[in-house]
Length: 618
Ligand code: M6R
Image (cartoon, protein in one colour):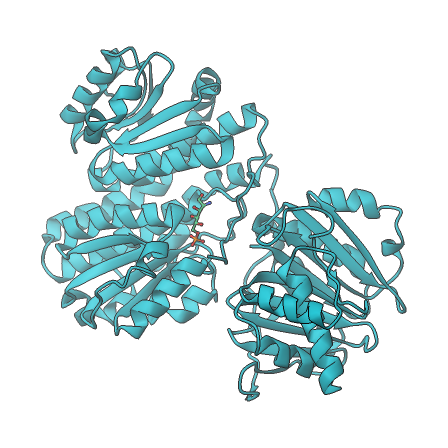
């Protein structure tokens, strides 16, 4: 939530900061701003809207003056509406200090009142302006350096933050700090330049060396010196670990596609293959996952597995519930992390918690993990972003290896999460003999075919597009599925809602008769998963019930199906596989359908309104 991009060094800062903001725009895009220090003054430009809007107003602006220090921000509003004034960066009262901030200062109101009593005047409604003025107040009062002032100020605030602060009277350093929101420092050759950003994407072409601050750490970054890191709360020094980045530029560019979402949909065959790599050894009839092997007794003797996640990751968790209970016969519960963290759940050291998160930064999931750990549970993470907060906070885990996902609507993150969770379910099922050798081996061989089947399935794009054209003006849609595909129905509805703003509901098909059927008429399309095996006959009955009420049916069926074809208005075929593996296929048409509807409606597919890619606030 909110993206920070900053630079201090010998290059022109403006293009680096602006390009960095563009890459971070998935984190927030309601307003934006940039400050360039020209050697004397801090040139500030801010605007409501996107980074492209900021570029327009800075095109012939002073801000383009040569300056080797700069910081920018792309915002997802928490305090104060998105407008020019509330956009970051924010200056302190004197105009000497400047800050960009990602997070929330919860006690900002109390601090603000105290500062107002001391004569401070605030221009914006933000908690961030309060924080930078607090730092200034502390600096004056204690007559100390910027780093110390930041530290003292942060010790009085409650909340979450990643901040970058600069003092124009001491222009060779930048101070950064983190509690609850990520921040990475790119280290240039011989410490001649530094890049600061919410993730490493803004500086990938300049350096592969990055320091990721941990929670409660702050860093003093000075040109020509090694980065100094210490704790915010007790002042103890930390030896910063410089990590070698694996990411490359190609991965974070659109690669010829109109949108990141479309690119990421099409990347799924490769992403799933990457998730399998070194794990799915079908020719040896084995699944290799050291994170499960190392904790096998714990998993097999667990009272239950509790899965915590948000949004799409929660849907992947629901699929896992069906998979693990079916294949390994271990009880599973799936919870919204945001509910779990506040509802005083009963957790013991015999429980295993699996936390699922693409970004690894979701605040609710992170807080739920900390709660589960405090109650003695073993916490296993399924994350995409390597080195993310959740990956570091969990006891063990598996990466999905989907590669960077930039479109706000999750696509390849979902299918790769299901892939990892299927491997875990199979591995546990084999280990506790819930699955026979034959069943296990058959699954492995069918799994291996999935990337090719997804590739094949993607060829239906034009067909899905023609269906999208028919239903793009619907105002309400129903998504139905049963068993393993009930969560896919939820995910299909979420995809449509978030990028096309069409209201959509996902339901277990049989639940329809308990309420949603009242909505059915000729204007209400129902997207239904009716694959063979599973609960096929039951779902066919549900389709009949809808048709009897003049509803429109778009059905996802198994290749060769004739029964549903006769009654449905449109069918989309998926290749044959085991029922438990169908979520990896049935989800693809729903992704394409939402994508095309959103494009036809002229919506911003990659940056839908009000949303942000990683939700690092409550
Ligand atoms: O990064 P996470 O997987 O923890 O994110 C959880 C949700 O915020 C995320 O899945 C969200 O629902 C997506 N926009 C869905 O497309």
